[in-house]
Image (cartoon, rainbow over all chains, first blue to last red; front, side, top):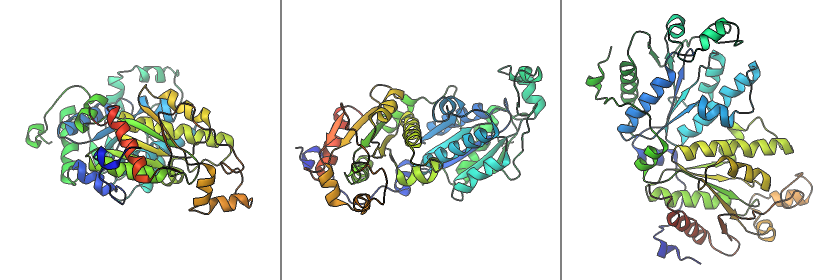
Amino acid sequence: MADPKSKNITWHDGQVTRSDREKQRGQRGVTIWLTGLSGSGKSTVAVAAEKALHDLGKATYILDGDNIRMGLNSNLGFSPADRTENIRRIGEVAKLFTDAGIIVFTSFISPYRADRDQVRAIMADGDFVEVYVAADLETCEGRDVKGLYKKARAGEIPEFTGISAPYEEPEKPELVLDTGAQSEEESVAVLVAYLKKQGYLSA
Amino acid sequence: MADPKSKNITWHDGQVTRSDREKQRGQRGVTIWLTGLSGSGKSTVAVAAEKALHDLGKATYILDGDNIRMGLNSNLGFSPADRTENIRRIGEVAKLFTDAGIIVFTSFISPYRADRDQVRAIMADGDFVEVYVAADLETCEGRDVKGLYKKARAGEIPEFTGISAPYEEPEKPELVLDTGAQSEEESVAVLVAYLKKQGYLSA
């Protein structure tokens, strides 16, 4: 049997709180919910903002299609009910990361206002920052990096947001990034400046 | 429009990798999967081990009934299919935390070997540490902190693990903590010593 003292384990009562984790990391846990059309630049902004924050010593994570649709939500399709459940689960996971004191980005089209508002509703005030990545349809379709708009126009992708399914713009987002007019660098600078000003980058 | 330079944002290409996060935190991401009967001490061990690691400057988190059953898995019941889906989702979330470079504890009875093995299967080698919290039924029932065994014996709780539903012991857990024979302090010391020896507490 190991002797605790010999293992340099100091014994303390009590549990580690969110505040303890935030103090240790010098930041506040928060969910940065990026919403916008396909091709609007959500992932680009998330990746670049994460890099900027990481270089400031902050603890970050990104939830996106790559790590959610293949894993947690691999048993969901694209029916209306499944789309709502998709966003619900992402919101719950983002809430856990936020509670863990992490700055977590979510990068999903999340076209329905009710779904986004439902996520906001489960979060404490200040834990949910809705960021509208607001390139317009013409800009996004003009980029068409993945060729999805072309396929959607050809009718090969049913219910494609912006073409054959609605995108409901946020009514009161915490931040709007006009990635049609401003550069990637500018968008990231605006986002990081917002987080700094609102006190998320200190604890 | 904000000028990036004026905001002290340094621009870098590329994305933040798991390895980057682990280096920053001086640890390796890992899932510590605690399994055992109700009352075996899973939560006690998780809370105390998290405290010990936090005091060593490590980034940790605990997934347990409190933050999972009320949130992510609030739409699941206790049917066999729902129990399996419950563990599947917890495993997927633990995998995300592990990828984020966090030392994440999961504290669930998780009585079925197939469910636990399925979680192990989605993780990379070394990312999943199965810890059997192995107080025997007599010990757990003797403690009965929440009065659940008494209710189960009275038939008030159907399919209660150990009484009216099976607990399948791990066949090859990475670690066994005999919380019936050893103190809480000793169990935590053994667990932390294991993590240190296996290299999880440095990056």
